[in-house]
Image 1 (cartoon, rainbow, N blue to C red):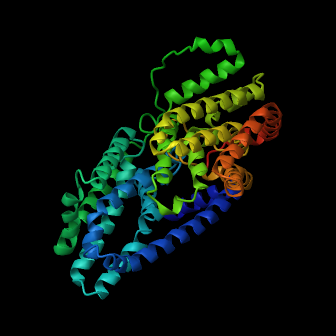
Image 2: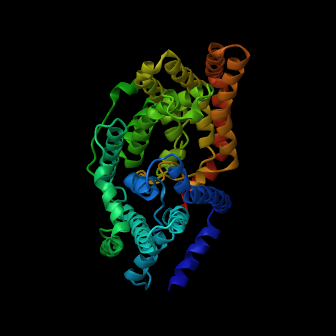
Image 3: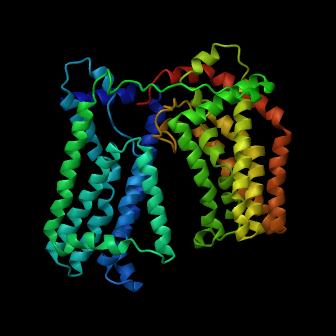
Length: 491
């Protein structure tokens, strides 16, 4: 039976309309995985000696002290990025398969996820170094097994917590507050958590507690999905009570106002779009890495513009790159109506511009770090309005990814969003403003760098009508490919 399931997945991959994109993305993922594996191996071998050299105390105790942040951050990364490899269950319910077999295969696939076994490339060499350095072998084995079980627990916690934003975001906020309190010396949560991880080494048999928790989570996840795997409720589409919102003040803008009303309602009513707004707000604080001097690697003055673009353009990048995918559920209906692409794209453009202006205003607290910091944000916003706003709409024509508005999975992107054209359009979005600023900064002075970037944005804004005509032609050219893609589900 497992062989049959593997065969279905294999055919789904090769028969997909996006096979070439999937294959390119898989190859890119392999290189990315090799990169992180190399980093984990280097840290696994070198961490012990680095901690010793810096005089930070017992390397094992030091690692255990901050293990709580490692474990919780693992959950955070999984929740945002890990794809749940659940089969397309609905068609299988009509076939003579046992529910337990389908659930067992679906959950079993998660065990082999990169998010699980990648940690071994750090903990295995680190454990070997501990053994070579004379640590108690039984204690090291107990510690290693106990820690690895926790990461597999995270796998099933992520499955059980899938799409439960009301639980996830408060936990992340709590961890962030605890981290800040520890950084400033107000409260140290590691005083209470470090002994738990030390226990795996000091009392090796306690590793069985982690494995017991893992077994309990496995059975809980299995039971949960088996109980809910039926069409009339478990897999049924959720229906919410509709609320009427007119936004009559937008009627003065004609068809443009109609599109804007639809976009505002879409953002307010759907899980995925709400997540995008939250991500946009988080982007505002991205500049703290650059303007506070906390990271030496970002002290080069050119990075200030990079920060300014992301601080003001969080919504632009997270929402704009998926136009028209936000409307994928009813895009075929829209295209059957007498709709002008120019008005449709203009509504998205105005929404992006409004969000960019709001982000820039909210970023005024960067004045605390100096006028130069906030000036970088303002200049980045001007470039986003005059250049990047067009580029994200242009790139959206080539991203044929249907979006499930009821789920926030893949909120950071999707494999179908990767192709050569969108990759090439990324270069002027991020690298061109850095080059323009660097030209003015190093040839004249920093003020000239800001002026050059701002003038580029103003010049782009002046050619709005010309650029929109070209983007409109591209959308018309890609129209039928997009309609075909939205009829298929990603493999």
